[in-house]
Image 1 (cartoon, rainbow, N blue to C red):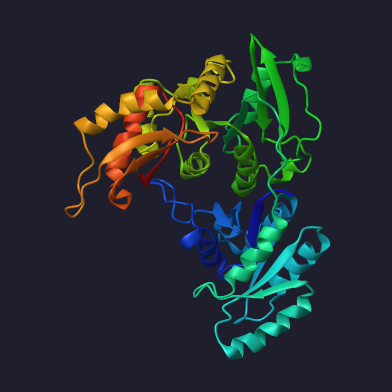
Image 2 (cartoon, rainbow, N blue to C red):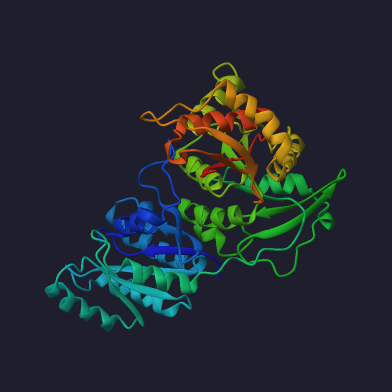
Length: 433
């Protein structure tokens, strides 16, 4: 089943507004990171204790009429292949259009749960008009107004009934996901690491159809590689669609401990790479960035140092991430990449003893105390690490609401310096002592 919810529908029915409602507002655990485009196509929603990913297919169609309807159809097809639940949006003000009927035919043939969402129902007259959509033959129909938000609660309740936490394979071995845009060299990296000697690859039974799990054990190192390039026949059809690669990346990021994000040295870090980066960061996954095809870049115009500075500028404030320049084709530094990923995994699993944590952090806090807020002093008494799979810390203090973000960054940087959390997002909470 999985936990991806796809919003499909023709243009201008309000897909992105409903998308923003679902991931925005009170439930949002999504923040805008610099460099991530505003028309973000996916985010995370938490509702009724379940966390799931919402994908808005609207951001992916280039507006040119001839390819337009074909592109929408192929998106519906991908959503059917990849999502756990499909929210099919229509617009009460236009009634049922030919394109709506086309999409209905595709969706009705699929085995996926489809929630029909009639948008812009914001007065009694429209409520009556909305009834005509029952004729499309879907069991679950919701009348909503994405602008005012009415009806979205019921829609979310229905969504959460269909999403499940993915069955994750039980293993103590580190799980690495190789993610990135199409044609950046993900499959080549996988093949270069696993080599022709395929008998070191054990395909683990019972793994999801979305990702292929391969176990690597060579040179005294063991880990699981999650391959999102996908060895499914259908993949070829969608190879060029960034939407498809995003859908694949989401599943792998969810299951991994560390994401190896590959970017193309010839294009540099692009908006799509930033989206994948921020998704991994929000999910508290370890990160290693590989700049692939470095052998093809003219060195006189571009030094690795300049390139690295530019990447760090774009991914700031979380820029404490290993960046390696590799050529998968030439097999340059790919084993260094494995070592970095294993080190990041170790950093992510690190537990610091409470006494040691306080011995190290208290002098820093005394040297640079939190600034007071409107005459209210914030005094931090004690810090504790939470028992989460990733580094999360609670600082017990007076007036926790008044701790400024800048001070939170200061504490995060001190934690990074003292305890080596390179490549790992750190979560910090402030609580009344």
